[in-house]
Image (cartoon, helix red, strand yellow):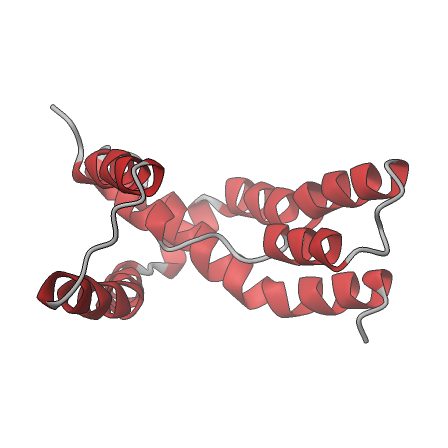
Length: 145
């Protein structure tokens, strides 16, 4: 059985490859739905947050946060410096995007694939809280201050 997210990705790729652009009410409907997804996902995440689960999963959440906010951008930074493109704006944007918090889609995927919802929620919350510090660090390192 194909999951709706996979189906949406495949459909989106087909539309992009064939350069099909929805118009009229279809575009307006898709725009309204896409504007509702983040607030709804955050609302769902907020209803599931459990401090006890965070305490139980603290090692995995800390590991996820360090990997997401520090190691992924660090790998990109090292590659950017090695290839000599650290002055380019796109390289800096890539590093900042990699230092962004875990996406709310992680919760949706964990729920639909019967994964560890509590771990996904904890990772989203902790990386969102710590992302301010991570952004300051990466902005300073990249000279964007």
